[in-house]
Amino acid sequence: MSNNAIGRKTSGVDKALRVALYTVLLVAAAFYLIPFIVMLITSLKDVEEIRTGNLLSLPAALNFDSWAKAWSSACTGSSCGGISPYFMNSFQIVLPAVAISTLVGAINGYVISLWKFRGSDLFFAAMLVGCFIPFQVILLPMAQTLGWLGIANTASGLVFVHVVYGVAFTTLFFRNFYQSIPSELVKAARLDGAGFFTIFYRIILPVSTPIIVVTVIWQFTQIWNDFLFGVAFSGFDTQPVTVALNNLVNTSFGGKEYNVDMAAAIIAALPTLAVYVFAGKYFVRGLTAGAVKG
Amino acid sequence: MNTKAANSGSGQTQSGRPARLSLADWMPKIVMAPTVLVTLVCIYGYMIWTAVLSFTGSRMLPSYNFVGFEQYERLFNNDRWMVALTNLGIFGGLFIFICLFLGVTLAIFLDQKIRAEGAIRTIYLYPMAISFIVTGTAWKWLLNPTNGLEKMMVDFGFVNFKFDWLINPDMVVYCLVIAAVWQASGFVMALFLAGLRGVDGDLIKAAHLDGASTFTTYRRIILPSLKPVFFSALVVLSHIAIKSFDLVAALTNGGPGYASDLPANFMYTYTFTRSQIGLGSASAMVMLGCVLAILVPYLYSELRGKRHE
Image (cartoon, rainbow over all chains, first blue to last red; front, side):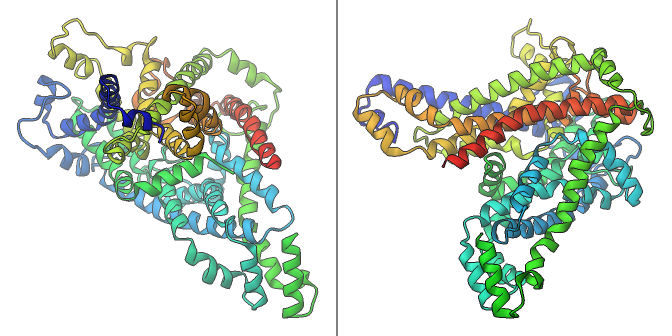
């Protein structure tokens, strides 16, 4: 709309502007793409090719050895079984944490927007602060608490932590979504004798699909990519993949194997990248919902 | 108010008893109770707990011998902390400024009826989907002085090209900026693009009819109307900057020496590996102070704005 003026007359100046515009956009695209391309190329080279070539020189042949090594035999700190066990750990942590935090967030959002009680708005505001605090402020007390509960260094402990600090966000998402549902709908259902859970299950849940997708994707990305809680609260065999990747990269037995590092990094990024590629629209919606609150 | 009406209505139709006694009226409070409890304990309770610890002489284990502001004094006399704080200033300032600049520029450019806009947008935003640990690992390889960017430029014929920021204590913090901008600027672009699409089209048409150039329209009409987007981007970016921990861990591990430490890394090191819980807690409280200094005015203006509507 804003460049109707440009569209109407195609003078030389406008054409030149147009070319400049595309050039800037493509240079920017290269800036975002090249690191990933370099990672991919590097992961397919052997150590010799990395030493003699440069970042953008292509491998002579596609060589997946470093992928196999990263997956099943690279050393990550204390053990040398690749990152596959930690990849599985991440799923074990992420799946329950996403499911629980989404469910709790849905019910909280339902209460806060449609069953307001005295203090519920104030509580929601208090909860919002929880989205923003730097987690350094809660690390040590949480470590102590996990110890008392007997779930320190376990996957359940990490699930617990991710649920506790994820619920603020999931509640926010659902609350904002349910704000648009007229409260008369709930009133009418109550007059017909429907209870709290019946209304939720029969009326609210069926219209919630979009916000559930957004929340699940947001939580999945957040928890999969988490490093701070993983490094602070996990044990040797319950580390999530981000922690294992960092250990792998910083472990130096013998020579540095950048090809294995890159293969491991891509493996660690694959699940969230896949989500982004297949559900990018919802990912963006979660990002903007997380940013523009209210 | 609405709820009160609904409550009494249902109370009378269902049981004829006062609403307060029906289970349905208690249900919302019962299901919210666990979240309320957890929020009060695990956010506010822990905040207070950490605050208390910051006034004690705790070392390896929490102890409660109070020492007043001693830990804060030690903190601000600690060279490593001052380096971390300075780094946060440089890193945060540059990161926020460059992200905003890139984000606005790319969003405006993308908003000019670009062919393949969807594909380009996807490319700009994908780094936001991956972990800072992956980003750090990638950039550690790209920026390493022996086989990385430097060698590539030398191979391309720039024989004297030198790029050793990653191992140069004076420059290493800029490596953090590069990697963080790579990861987050696409997100700022997406925020502004969404904002641009929400600008009233009639307003722009009117400006054009009045003879305003595209440039003037952006500068005088469109960008000023994006102020709210600007502020939320600012809050999110400063939040990312203050919490940055994983990027440093993966890209530089704080090195060389502790030249690229950020406060979050300082806090972690002192609390968990150096057994200085009191000092670590004090640093966490300073971080909280930084976040609140940004957040409170923002929330205040948001809430006030809403009341005016």
